Amino acid sequence: MTDLPRVASPDEVPVLDLTPLTQGGDIRELARQLDEACRNTGFFYISNHGVPERLTNEIFGATRRYFALPAEAREAHVMDPVYRRGFMKQGINQHPGFQPDLKESYEIGVDLPADDPDVTARLPLHAPNQWPEELPWLREASEAYFAATRALGERMLRLIAVALDLPEDHFLQYTQKPMVQMRLFHYPPQPPASPENAFGVAPHTDYGMITLLNQDPIGGLELQKRDGEWIRAPYVDGTLVVNIGDLFQRWTNDLYVSNPHRVVNRTGKERYSIPMFYNLDYHAPVECLPGCCSAENPPRHAPISSGDYLVSRFRTVQKYGAETEPA
Ligand SMILES: O=C(O)CCC(=O)C(=O)O
Ligand SMILES: [Fe+2]
Image (cartoon, rainbow, N blue to C red; front, side):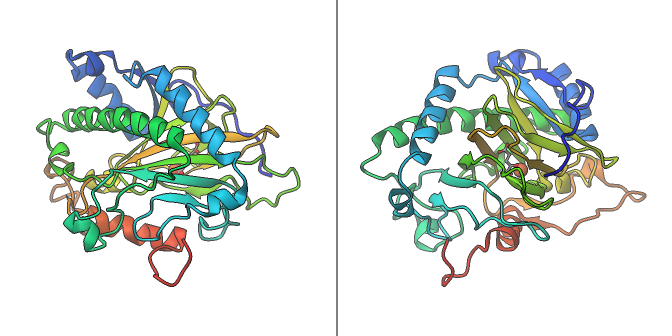
């Protein structure tokens, strides 16, 4: 197992108090703080974010209960590889150069009707959710938490637009059928003798716009600063951890960084976490924002659609997309 890194300082991973965003005040100072955090490590905590504590408790309760079900019961909910709704067993997610991640997951997205034209065309990630009939509590807790964090994701997109001196709806215009992925994660304790390249989640950057992560008090999230040092982002009561993903980095021509991070569950206990990956519509055109490039600083990345980029990353990491492969 890797050595235990030190805890991040408040300069490295600050706590941003979202009160003005949640309650409808002046968000310019908050936008400035977000801008600084995104130029630095790309990770920060948010407090007073508006996701009720009750919904967090209920979704963690449902997550524990789900992963305590017998393996055969969960195998019945295995996800379709294009739709990506339901159970993903341990061993599928594998980052190049590392052992498969130790975690297992259950995935939920924007719940589209089966006759939605993007669903019938099998546009990746466009699907109805998978709600096992025998588990009404899973649906109830997930739908409530999903709605609250989706709304938070939209508020965050507004704040980010302000941080970048853009019209407030610059990113929100691409949230008609956003490819939001909420994942319920279970990390078994990391075996003490596990090899150096085995992790709960191996080092990676997130693919999309922003990640809103609810981790339990076990902690275990570690991130890499721009200078290469690994630091810990422990659990902080009442907060979510936010980090930015690759597509956001591309919009800003690398002004904002999508930093590598990993999970090591060193505690000997079960760990649960619930990230919400807030991604834009499939066809959102991701290209350098006018304020982030110039003659001296030309665009570093070719324009790409949000969905095409996400799918290319799933193919590399999650053995995704081939109809013949198990999900
Ligand atoms: O579970 C966590 O704390 C982080 C998971 C993560 O980084 C990911 O799934 O992208
Ligand atoms: Fe991640």
